[in-house]
Image (tube, rainbow, N blue to C red; front, top):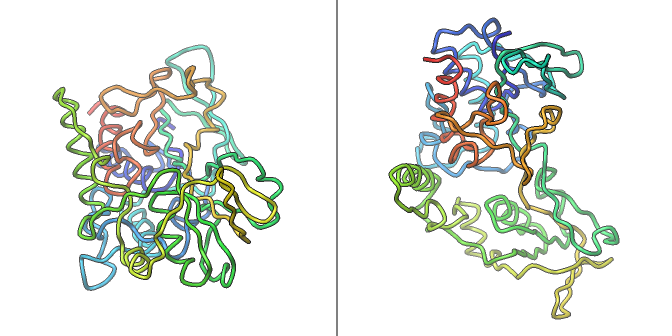
Length: 357
């Protein structure tokens, strides 16, 4: 296979779209390998009440706009709508995703730096001249380390394992984190449970009339400014949390009051440096994710800081091995490339670099 794409979520599909548009045939000239048994990337595994940060018209992959999920273009599509869209997108462009095909390792075939790369996994062994990794971050939830974590007698879970607020009805729940995931999960859980919200710094709320469209516009403006040698704050000057309806409702009933971060866990809850303590039955860690790149470990591409440097015209080509591209892992592989609407330009640039068109 000339080109292998590892991951069949939004980044892999967007890349497949541009490769197909360049004249390549899915399943013959390139293969999309997905570890999941069904379409949708990470979206089917996210919590039931998750909403996008932008309306359907601004949450689309290249080539086909996401259908409106209700009669209004101003609504925020739920998780199920996004899964349906990604499923139909895959079918619409006949991208022939191979699943379940989990790639556990990528290695060089020989000492030739222009040679092929070998992809292996359970019931999988193939070679490719070019590999595009789009595995995202969902499978690598980040857990911070605090004293007393092992001694806490209650339940601890990461946002990656959160499903529905009914699981916490009547419990005492602490939600940790200052981003959108924490705000959305807090909004749900606080409707059925006694909640405490803790953040390492005060949460920053966007104005009610600002959503992901403004964030993407700010990120795009920053890219252009940096290319022209000008400074630009990007999304940092706007805020972090999008005020979707559930979050606004939680704010209006007083549930969005955040406390400073505790410094340790106790058997019955958490405690702060000043001696204050809070009992809890559950702690939900909304503390983000890290790139899922374990399959690339055999290539030894990380630098002294643990990063895999990328660059080139596409912004996604691995400096240490030009046969490899990373897409959709965060701003370091393209500003806003981890979003539905933001991945398109970098998928296009990657496909152009791979095909030479």
